[in-house]
Image (cartoon, rainbow, N blue to C red):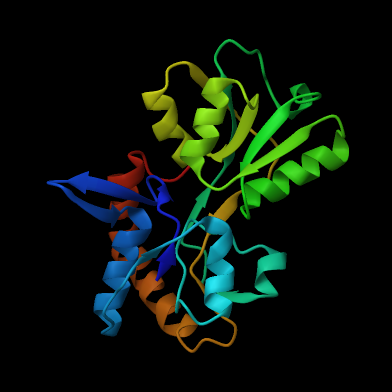
Amino acid sequence: MATSADYPPYEFVETAGGTEEIVGFDVDIARYIATELGYELEITNMDFNGLIPALQAGRADVVMAGMTPTEERKQNVDFSEIYYEAKNMLVFPASDNITGVEDLAGKTLGVQLGSIQEGLGNDLVAATPSITISPLNRINEIVQELKSGRINVAIIEDTVAAGFLANNPDLKAVEIADEEASGSAVAFPKGSERVEDFNRVLAEMKSSGMMEELILKWFGDGEG
């Protein structure tokens, strides 16, 4: 499994006792599925924009990284059913008065390279050409750029933004309104025979209540 472990609570690197371990919501799901299907799970960490090329090149069998199954991505990889839905937020310094996308004219907008948030940012630029996009590899880089003033605002998924907002009281966020909910799914190489098996276990996890338990464990208050 390939992932981009900079996206808490989906996947992140936890350092405890001098060792580094990739943990998170996606990792718990992947470990359960691997156990159910009799696989041994090996996790590789890389930048988000390298995940689909890794599948295409045969360097990974699956990707779990809070990835949304967009029409563009479906041309290159296959996806499981969506296992979690979330919304996007505008994150900005608390000193700024941003109430929504209508306030982004003339601002520099940070997004994660290769993410659905980058696509959303490009849509905003198409509507308001005075917005400048600043694509960065990792979410913590985006937060640092925000805090240093090199970008004005960022688009980050709500569950991920929550953790950064809790640790950075100098930042604020507002939900991007009237946007279709974006969901996360498992990505596979085109034609992978694993999709059906993964969908079966994901459905079992939902019906048994295990998925809701993991959502509560990692997101605290369930979906929404």
